[in-house]
Image (cartoon, rainbow, N blue to C red; front, top):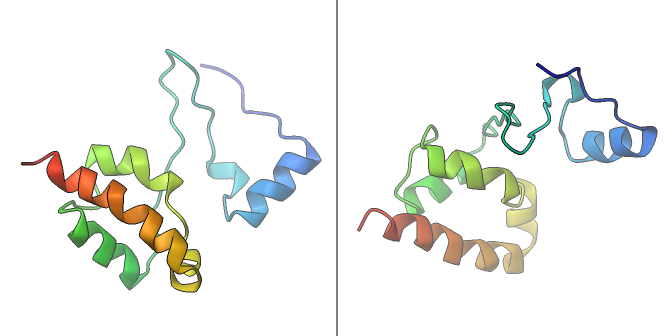
Length: 97
């Protein structure tokens, strides 16, 4: 098992601005077993996105992809971000077909 990551001050600032608490981050190493933990925001838009993708909060494929989704606040504020996410949601839905 590897030691905890040592984040430099710039990385700490960026991670904090993105809303990622440092104590809950782990490093994903190639071939390793450490993953970055992901928790869904408690926001109704998340449930709407999951319904659109025909997925549940604990589906593995969604948990792998969701950390790259824009935040709920960004989706509400930027229609382009919302439109850019739709093809990915449709792709998740098609995987069941």
